[in-house]
Image (cartoon, rainbow, N blue to C red; front, side, top):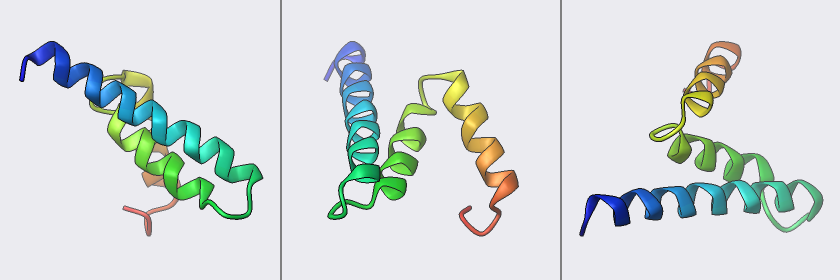
Length: 65
């Protein structure tokens, strides 16, 4: 696999989990917070704002780490 393809795969999967998380906040079937955390964790490999957000979440909720 090329490097570009892997990057697109990471971005699509990360944003997909974030979208599922947002939908899960309104739908009783999905666990929204869980999908949001998974999406942010995946996106933190590519985006600095996601790394910062993840670090702040780990500081505020150490039991999640």
